[in-house]
Length: 105
Length: 141
Image (cartoon, rainbow over all chains, first blue to last red; front, side, top):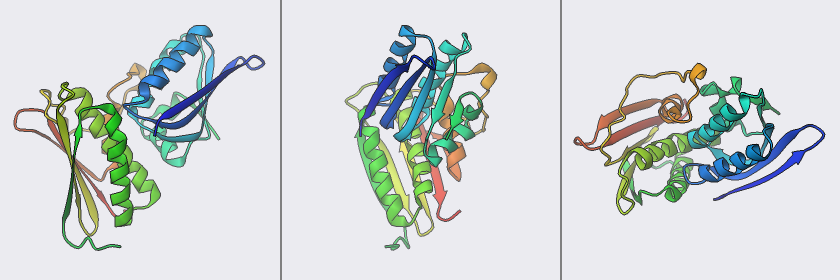
């Protein structure tokens, strides 16, 4: 399974909306990295990730999010992660990343 | 369904390329669901084994024409998965270190995740070349 990413910028809320569909692993993590890097180059704003259709993510994807977070956090921007599966929430919790990113239902 | 009274071995040899890690996950899902692991446990297994494969690919042999091996051993009440890489490095650390978030790093979470999701994890050296990661998960724990 591959990874499809859709994104748009919400002008009212000043935030990137990014929907992930598929799997983020060692093969697809670069696609995520390239996409998010382009977005924050265009506008260095917070990113809200919709994980409704995110089937799988591991440390390769978490690493990408950490890298992007470091770039935007210098300007106090956040990464918000919404609607992820329980198994993925667990991954954020055991790595302590639930304290770095904002997890929302 | 649960005819795994004795040990059964299933072995995969996959090219040292990122695109094949999803095949390992599919194989594992199918084996683990036959054994009776629930969805949550299967998700944990998938992540742990992918992390080990990612290690094999990124820290192991760089030559893409070579393969690395994954052995699935199924028993009545547990599955043991061993990932052999033939790299030069040895990333063995049998201690568990919680990631330090005052110093956020992009890499290095993999081994921590494996240890958190599996019941037993053992690192050893592959005859002086590379790393062997052996992971065990018990049914119904």
